[in-house]
Amino acid sequence: MLALALVVVGLTLGVTAAILFVHDKQAKLHPPAGVAASQVAPSTVKPTTQAVASYTVPADNPKYLSIPAIKITDTRIIQLGLTKTHQIAVPDNVYDTGWYDASAEPGQNGAMFIYGHVSSWTVDGVFYNLKKLAVGDKIRVTRGDNRVFTYQVVTTKIYPHDNVDMNSVLAPIDAKTPGLNLMTCTGKVIKGTSEFSERLVVFTSLVAG
Image 1 (cartoon, rainbow, N blue to C red):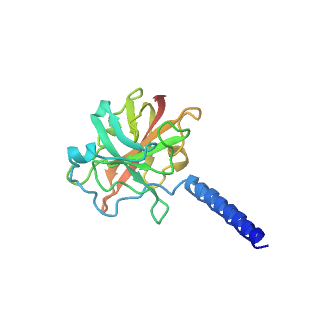
Image 2: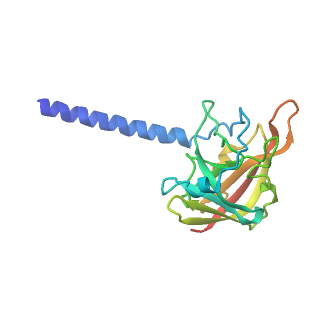
Image 3: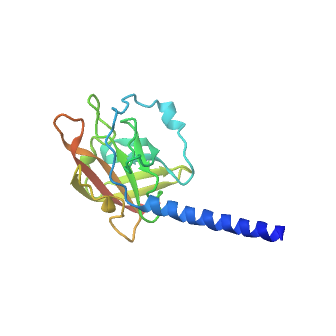
């Protein structure tokens, strides 16, 4: 009887764990409220060459971002989660980009979402020139295992800062092809705040990797 009871308990715990796992995955798939505005000014201390070169992430995660058209080369991609207000967190340095960890991994079905700052009060951020990208420009993402995935710009879109369509932002522009969507601030600084009035999103599709 004791053995039977232990088996029942084990099965119950297994089912409970499976249910919690499914619920957690569903919660992550639920579109967040948006991207959080920085509560404190991001750091403007540029990472050293050594810090960038020694940066590591799990094999399947994005590690570096390169966009030749706007002279971005092997910029670190930091893992981002959600804030307490169900918004995507932002990088704490203007020179780093951030990958929302509930979005797709490189080459995976769906869309990978990466955010970067446009500027601080004193220096240009990593995505300062994102607005200059044109259809056909290439973007490379290097994974933790150093495999490189190449994406191509398909289109861009500008949203009001308080009305970003996160369903579209977190979905591939071509449902049949893995995507990479980049976001940054644009527009004008809202009077009396450090918040920009608009968000720029660049939609891309995988072409090699």
